[in-house]
Amino acid sequence: LAPSSLWPKTSLPLRQPRRPHSMAPPDFYALLGVDRAATNEQVRNAYRDCAMQHHPDRGGDPAVWSALQRAYDTLSDPQKRAVYDRTKQDGSVGAEKAFGQAFAEKGEGAAQQRGLSIEAEMAEAKGKGSTLAAAGFDMSHAQGFEAWMRNQKGMGKQSFYTAEDLLRSRQYGNIEATESTAQPLPALSATAVRFDAHGPPEEVLYVDRACSLPDKLAHGEVLVHMLAACVTDEDLLRVQTPLTVLNDFPPFNRTNNKWEAVPLPATAGVEGVGVVIATAKNVPTLKDHPLEVKDWVLLRPEARRRPAGCWSTMAVVDSSMLIKVPAQLMPVRHLACSRSLCTAYRLLEDYGSLRPGDTIIQNAADLPVGQAVIQLCKMLKIRSINLVPDDEAFEQTKELLVQLGASHVLRDNAKVGEFIDALGQMMPRLGIDSLGGEAGKRMSVALRPGGQLVMHSLQTGQVPTISPSLLMYQQISLHGFNMAQWVDENGVEAYKDMLNTIGELVQAGNLELATAEAPVRGMEPSALKAALSSHRRGAAGRPRERSVLVLGSEAAANEVYFELQASIRSMYGADEP
Image 1 (cartoon, rainbow, N blue to C red):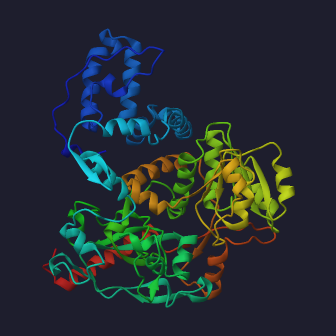
Image 2: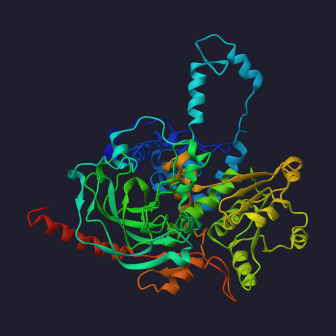
């Protein structure tokens, strides 16, 4: 909620509350007579005014008074109010039920995407008005501008650039802010996982126990004490391959969305959670991406920018690459894997037009995205068919996933006949593919007519080869999903809303994660290799797991902060605040 100082102090005029009836739940804002943007103080004042009129001791209706109490209890609590704003249900329904209701309402109320109506467009084009001739046909100015805007989506920034854009962009290396916004730093070093050349991660990554940090925070930069980072496929891909090679090939060479080069040597890591312990002087007052000391932050999913290098106990990061989150939103392990949780959420929300009673199928179901999909499906009353490696740990993996809520757990191998027999009459509406190649192809033959196969990772490096008969006669469709691309298109605020929803489910005990912790301090080369490959294959009695690199703690962040502030004061002299 916004601080009360940002809103007028005058209370809103009191509206006569409606008596609740059984046919429709009352609107809590209307009951209290406040606007949806009302502050806590305005809600409290309105409740007091209502109490003077409608308390039973003053002759008020007990039913109306009960509804007013429920409205105040919900709107005065930030978490309950957030749930109510999304679901129109008070916080007493619980995070799981609210999530299920919101999902069902989305499915029932979502309009089908409207395609092009040729007759309607032709009739509109014949209307009167100023027209713009283009490519041999007439188009109104409004239609032309709308078409231009629509076709810029995903092509990179096309509009005007502000001074802040130029100062923060790496494309203009000769444009720098004055030293007045910089924050000098004492000599600092960190323990980091680094690489000097691109190549197989197990071969090129190493632990540098004395990685030097910059001697100042430049315009827009902050110093982050990292807490944890999940080892993901994207992390390993950015180490193995310089994606800048794609910039020279179509369609990437036809857009302004270029992959940024990674200057070597570099620190690995694209996803993690940390605490801000110092900022450049301009960062707290920025219009966009302002941050302050002791803010908890996540690395923003970025589709094209070079990795921030968060596999380090401390990292200097541009504030535009960070997202501020509440410190108690969810446990550190969940925050470190938050992109996996959000990916699972979006896959079920955006694909398959799922309803309670439907069925989905997924491979790599034992990794974080798969674990989250299983638990969300359980809440949504959707059956899940889960494919996991056919290795020595299969039975232990199956037991774990069944405990999480899996409907079926099957061996993922090349025995297609046994696979189809195991499915029986089940024909999933949605397939979630983390592997690609033959593994994705196997799932495509299991889908019902009109089913969707969505790739969110390609661990094999190959796109599934779907039979033309499935595409043409079964109308099976193939899709790709990337969380960074989704954030680019939908914005950071939408991503934060999703994190808040997931945080409510985690706090309610509805989303658990099985991961392996790998402390970076004192890490030996053999331990680093194990952390990089722990997700590939299980051993006898031990299922495979994603590793979460443990980089620090909140207590350590506080300690480093006080030491850092003392060093900065000594740099300026005793009279510096």
